[in-house]
Image (cartoon, rainbow, N blue to C red):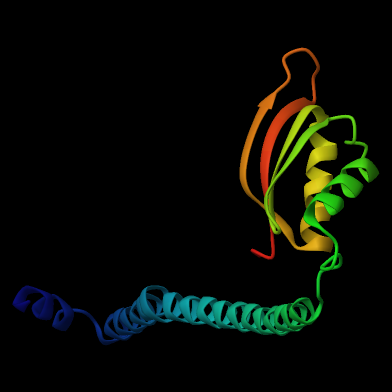
Length: 167
């Protein structure tokens, strides 16, 4: 450090002013590029993240309100066919979904539970039928065994245990 001081004092006054000015410029540049710019960028990123999270929170609140309204509407809606027998509903809806020929057996276990066997049933048709049973009648599948038909693509053999009022 002494050598630096001796070197500086050995300079002409005009050179000292130029070295001092250059040191101030270098100091300002170091401050800006090493401290100010990174902090300013981090602050801008944090502000953008807060804005994005606030927008997401507003969206979630809107979805929450919509979900609560749908849940309330779903709770108020009673499934149709409450006075019909489960066997009647299964038979009628299977025929309406072009599965009448595929249903080989409907075995009741009690008023609200039955086992249905299907052979060579179209998989898509069976899924639409099960969706109809659940959405319109409140009948769900409690057990299912499904195997594909090796002879025809898209067809399955299935054994389903249907339950009313379990959802």
